Length: 415
Length: 95
Ligand SMILES: Cc1cc2nc3c(=O)[nH]c(=O)nc-3n(C[C@H](O)[C@H](O)[C@H](O)COP(=O)(O)OP(=O)(O)OC[C@H]3O[C@@H](n4cnc5c(N)ncnc54)[C@H](O)[C@@H]3O)c2cc1C
Image 1 (spheres, rainbow over the protein chains, first blue to last red):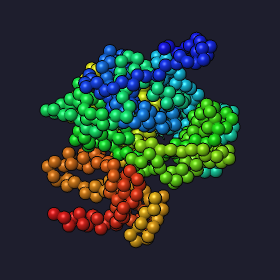
Image 2: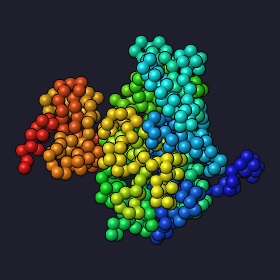
Image 3: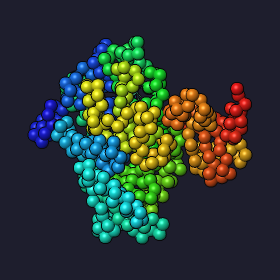
């Protein structure tokens, strides 16, 4: 069924009885050309394998329900304002894919380019943001520097004269924004399923079948499944899953929390980030303020965090938007992420033939979903890394070729 | 989380800075012929277990001691807390 205004209209006239399930619910076949583990980026990879490379004998195995990982837990911010030459073109490509995603998938993912403003608080930070803006422009992305007067007109409620962190202006990317995260999972699953890709939920991968140094399939809670190629896309659980293949990764698992306030009338035009601490905020279409900050800082596989992180986030909120002090917190949750040793992702082959790895997305991987799926599909189909992901190699740590956006070194909880 | 500091008693985890896996106490020998490979593993690879994890915590807002905290990464329960100094001495004493 193709979605259109006409479909909504005709379904409305016939009692909405004709809507179909979004994707098939197949039993796993004994063997596939490609097995994708994890239905976050993995779902996108499954879609692009079928849509761009004609490989549709593919299974996407998900241990829980579709979107139960961070793809359905994040604060949904998309942007392309990176600095490192390996990152920026990749994220800009991802933003371009977001722009065409809904037409391509015929699914309303509520991609909303409402803009993102990174606030700066000092002259030196302004200089830094000018440089970042120039890097963005050179990669083909958009960037605008807002001075204090422009920002005052746009967001009069900010605490411009804060004694500790006065707000001097911001770097604006108008094409940045937010996306309905669940709809991204559903849209990819529906489009992939139509092309013949099997999404198998409640199927946990518990091991790999390795024959003479080559991965020939996986062990799952639904029994063994053979495959020509296998890719792990299980950010948060990467170390756990890859350990079964004897691979130790340059990754630690950390918990990041997100917070939502009660529903309020529209007050924030777009995404806003604090420049002197870790705090970012946007308003959902339902009116809730969606915000977050930094990690809890300790290794964790529990999908929940602690209160000190909440306190830190709320201090950031009060430093730039004192009006938030009157909003009530409605709910909060945590997600477990792969924090890599340089803060950048990995899309690469592994030392085991036929086994590929996608992970290390840290807390910026939602915006990467389309490009990550796209480049992973390319790697699986051609055996060569896509040029946009050519820097995201697993052996870059051994080679000392780190992509350390923040410049903090091999300390995952600081990225 | 409450950290039962061996010298100071129960302290709020917010007083600490966390460095990571306590394996970092065992720095490789730079004269080892395999030193480049050993340092690559030491610096970049992590066991990252789901379950008990021994990790280095620094009491920055307190007595500035380094601790080895053994904690379950699936429940956040802290099982034991030792002075990193004692652990390092014990490691050295091992052949
Ligand atoms: C609170 C929070 C806020 C965030 N905010 C943003 C943001 O604003 N913008 C942004 O760009 N990024 C954000 N992120 C980061 C982003 O959500 C992640 O980087 C991204 O979703 C990772 O995608 P993934 O597909 O690699 O992992 P996931 O979406 O977690 O998918 C991995 C899947 O693998 C499955 N799996 C695990 N083990 C197995 C197994 N053994 N067998 C089968 N399946 C398995 C899991 O169930 C899961 O569904 C945020 C993250 C969190 C936690």
